[in-house]
Length: 212
Image 1 (cartoon, helix red, strand yellow):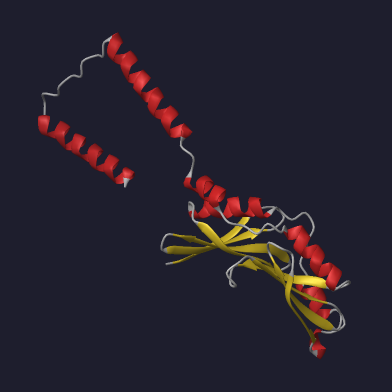
Image 2 (image 1 turned 120 degrees about the vertical axis):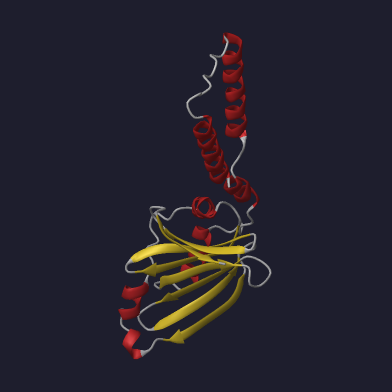
């Protein structure tokens, strides 16, 4: 909207100058007092704009997150299923509170574990035999996440909110595509929803998908 206003003003000024024809009005040189006054006003506007925090920063400060860290949730899973590799990690509020849903596999079985994001309590666990086509390390090798050097949840959240100009994160999903471990971060900003795909190690934004 601001750009449109500036364009219309510029267009109107151009038409005014054309209408004046051969008798353009020469602008008078500003007096030293006027020049100083203009500079002072500009400085005050700039200071005011610089002091305003962005909406993304404001939303990050009020963003609700689980008190249990990603590292703590991973450690709980690894203690329950020693030797298994994690293939997905999801954090959402489907149960009215923050819950970690972690999936993993070893050479013979796949495992699901749900962990309370506040108390660390195990809410649900499940294990099933893998299909023959997925046994003996096939699914493990194809789907296991790279859990080294993961950015923190705060860092991932900040990156996502910068892409959506604020809002609130409703879900974080750690997954793997084409060998890259990444976060899919769901953000709701007013009536608009978006999913921001972020490299879990580097913070590079891979994709932003808007859903009106």
